Image: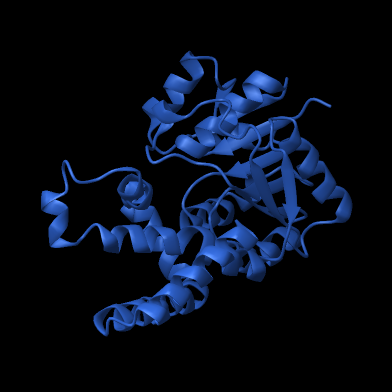
Length: 278
């Protein structure tokens, strides 16, 4: 069934959602963006059908928040009386507990539905120019039901995202989401950013290959966004950082002590863990 979808934020992720809905569905797309020229470009390219206003926000059956967590929540609070009754609000933010705590009660009190979301897809580059319609093809979409949703609404959101190529729709809780993302995503960015600060980085050219590229790829990040994500998810992220520090200390000590047997075992254990969970 044709819907009107409002996308709030037309950067890499929101822009890719707009382009995916345009390419794979017949939904009407309204695009909001803080920088008006970006929204105008999206309209000119036919990616959206209209530039978002408080007036046409009321037409939206689904609102997809695609900004930083705090700004996304602020948008809902500031426009709470402009949403269509029964509207479904979802998001693509990288943390979930923060949004669930701020939006669930608010949405319930105003007759709106809220289902948290997080697409497992992205690129190192940012902005609308970097967005593309097939970013989500074959990717996983994490969905977080809340007290402001129902099983039927969750199914509706799953169907919406399935239309644009997501191959897995994973249902989770905000707490489990944030704990797993602290390990699978946020910790990787912390390690990459720390690793590249070695003085040896200044001399690496000609000495680096695939291992270096793999480990440093996500050091090229949006520091404004990741600062907010790291701090808001600190309860899950700090223990993961502590765990890595503990294991690095183990490797450091056996290497410094020339304990080949213990080092072999540490490396073997790491290899077996990778083989097991891959």
